Image (tube, rainbow, N blue to C red; front, top):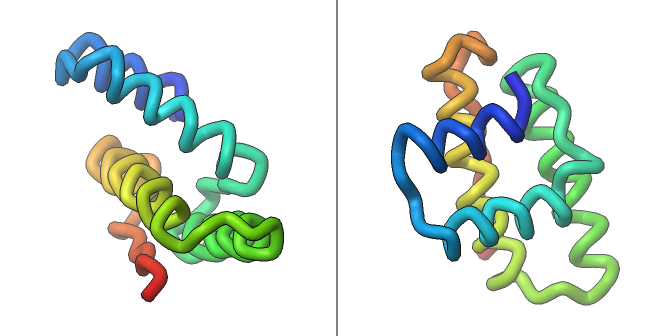
Length: 94
């Protein structure tokens, strides 16, 4: 299962708005190069690599938290669809 599968599910099954689909694509641009879905632990670690990269670039924590909210939703979807054995835990920044 890929992020494109997730987008298709959201678009055709959940009927999310075009604005929400654009937000998902923004999330993928920001975190796609880092995310690995081998296991919940790898998923979390790879998301945190993306966080470190964006913090180093000067992206504000509030923006990163917005992206992490979408990453959480993708991780939960993967878990519900059987792509991950456990529900991944992604913490927001403080």
